[in-house]
Amino acid sequence: MVTVDLTLLDTFVIICFEIFTVWVYAEIASGPQGVTSDGIQRAFLATEEGFIALVSELWNTRPDMATTGTCCLVGIISQRTLYVANSGDSRAVLGRKVGCTGEVAAIQLSTEHNANVEAVRQELKAQHPDDPQIVVLKHGVWRVKGIIQVSRSIGDAYMKHAQYNTEPINMKFRLSEPMSMPILTANPTIISHHLQPSDSFLIFASDGLWEHLSNEKAVEIVHNHPRAGSARRLIKAALQEAARKREMRYSDLKRIDKKVRRHFHDDITVIVLFLNHNITPRAHTQVPPISIRSALEH
Image (cartoon, rainbow, N blue to C red; front, top):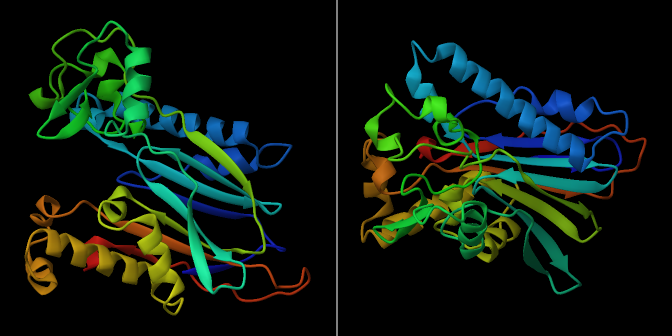
């Protein structure tokens, strides 16, 4: 958990799963006009370029790097404007106070790029009109080329560059026909939102949380409990729901080896960011450390 003074600083929240992004902050911060959507997009593409360069460098010794990828969710507050950029299926949700009712509404601020979303399937079909297998339904789950659920990511070079979709990568990642154009992209969807006094907090989380908790339920949990430990509390609620769906106890789920747990629930990473609109411009307060929790800790 972190409390943000909106009058003092620009805040960057970056969730990047599986690989670490080092280019994003520098690219966003270096623009002469400050934070812009174009600058954020350039940062994503620079991150992508850097990772693909690493794939090329390690191709002869670590070809598996070509099949490594990550979703990337970025939140930036600059001049009281919140920017949310997303490649993949992580999600950002805003908790907003509803008048004087004591209630908080859940507002989703990110667009998810997952083949299980009808709009994403239509987008892929429009981009690849000559490929009837661009999205395939396997075991009740839509996948791009029958392999991967997300349509946008950082990395996953094997789905973007033909030279990396060949031996020696694992057969399960190889396409049956030559790749004539990139199938996935790192290009993010970006929204901007002018923050209002009623905007209370933000939840940034990987898809593992949202598989088990609705936006409304997650916002309710944060709103109805003390701020401290919010991220941990959300993960526990998601794991309890995952256990319930498997008709098992939460305590039994926790005892399962972490290497096997992936069969019961996806990775879960959560950041909860509280917005403080009341600190005066010249005030200097100690900002608490950010609280990041992973399901592997549970």
